[in-house]
Image 1 (cartoon, rainbow over the protein chains, first blue to last red):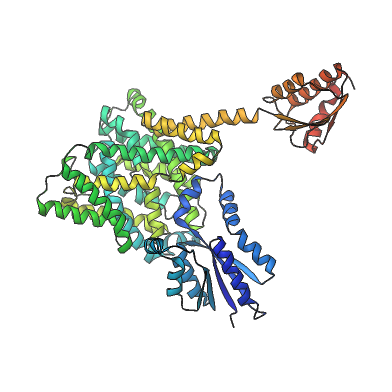
Image 2 (tube, each protein chain N blue to C red):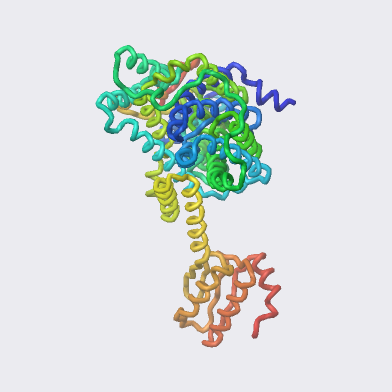
Length: 139
Length: 477
């Protein structure tokens, strides 16, 4: 049974699709909890600080980014909690998933084409390779 | 005690490693910034050593890196050109004193009032100036110089994909310096622009006459240095706060910057401040505590004492390449989107800040002009009220206070009102002072003369209080 489901979210439509699948997984077992992990990309700290008037504004902007996923989970009426991490999204998710020994990681794929995949690398692919638990990449 | 332990020794292994990485990345920058300032590389290297070591103890933001910086180097260049190194050292002492005073009087709070349009302009102008300062070192020198700059840039942007432990600038320096030496290439080197002394800095007083004339020369520079140094330091501390998800003591940081500069001045170092790029490198390499900053300073000095001979052989084009990377990293690339999306006045302030800095080569002037300009825009914006008519209801938008009453009264003077009775809706505004009450009474009387009944509705509690206090003054009811 997937009791502790880690949903990696960047707040995008792909993350919402991943949330839908997480809900399906969670529905099999009443004690399941979905942990939404949102990673603040510290490469963007400089630009976030420069473009906001206060720390509170940065905070609210980040909450807004993740709001679609949270809204979806609220409506789906499942048991969930949110965790905010800081660092590089891929490695942070892997580290956290392995430390917490979650039962499964669910992550949306960005849907890059072959060239982008080669240049940028796929976060979801890297995560899948390095976590010690099953991983589900949602297309 | 608990706090000291936490800030110094909670992350020992990562702090030491990150500090060493930063030291390696600092060396080329300290040398390049010395060249921008027009002094020997040792002035920037000593400054980086001493500032980093002092700020490790005195700063308010653990894990932040301070050293010789481009922003400060650009400001001091004219002083060095006209009066020489000793005046720079004296100005550095004075910068320290001014910053300590800023810290004591809690000026850090004032920084909150600097609009972000000005800060974006600040970093962009800094990036442009660092870039243009490189031009003389590679434009029109030789084809080989261009080749070396290009190869350096290629290495800087591709190496980090494969080698993550050693900073790319260091690898580029080692590889290309070796190539230049063994290939026998004719290139300008750091040695052509100054000397490297393989010894620790020593204490001495700047050789300037201690009189009013000296003060008159150095004070304007010191003030600019103090302001720009604090500005960049507080911006950097905010960035480090955000990256680590922790808070820092801004006033202690201001004081610490002052103490660091004050001490640096006595040891032959130039004024410095916190560095965005190096602090980001430190945090990303795992540095969190004060120990990382201390190690960065000490390891830098160690490397210079051991490797000084090699440092002077670094080809200038390699340093130029590294500085181009620094300026690209400093520039805020989301500015272009900002120019399209931000309110027009903010975009104007940002561009004006950049333009003034690039024109005057003085970051403090740009910041000052930017702040003034946005203050003017703010006053213009807040001193206009809009009135929207919906039937016999006149809805007021904006703030009613002494500066906006004119535009409020004028609206009703000009308005061609057909109704015999109207309502002034204050639900979207607030009365701030006596002037606005006066304006409301004036409008009432004005309209009554035209036989129009006026009722004021939807006033909030604070406005009512002010209104009630003065209501007895109206000439008719």
